[in-house]
Length: 234
Image (cartoon, rainbow, N blue to C red):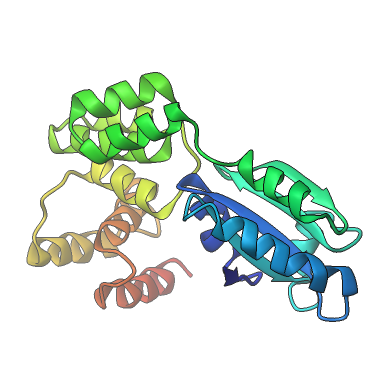
């Protein structure tokens, strides 16, 4: 169970729902039925043994997310899979009804087969996974990553168009457009070379942003070069 905010909802719920079903519980501290439903939801999700996750959104503290879901009354519960709402209900429900709601979100035998194929990670397994689930994010990103390593960038980019944008999809797309394997010094040299052209040249700006995606948010150079990019453009 996680308490989710307006700032973290996109990552902790929308993106996370590409990997596992997420139940979103909209509640407030003053809501009596919410206090009754909350523990029932927690027990039902816990019984799924990790196949379903629970995210709780306090509507008083996170009005933006509540508004996006057009929440009119609470408790309001929605299930998300693949970045989309797939089920939901409003108002308190009993133990049996909530257990059935969660049960409908459990992976099928085909889902389990797809996950096993994605975990195998070789090209044949990933292609078989996509035959079973053409828009499976893990299979798409995994296969695209392999294609980039084989210098088949255009094919990788076409494949990535199947799925919503995510941090990992952006990284692989950036590798497909710019080429893989740049070392730390080469990366900095490329950024420095592009910096003076980013204002007037859209292609240079795209490549600069792609290189930052490849470096990643955890690289200490990334925020430095993002600031330098902003300074050049504005």
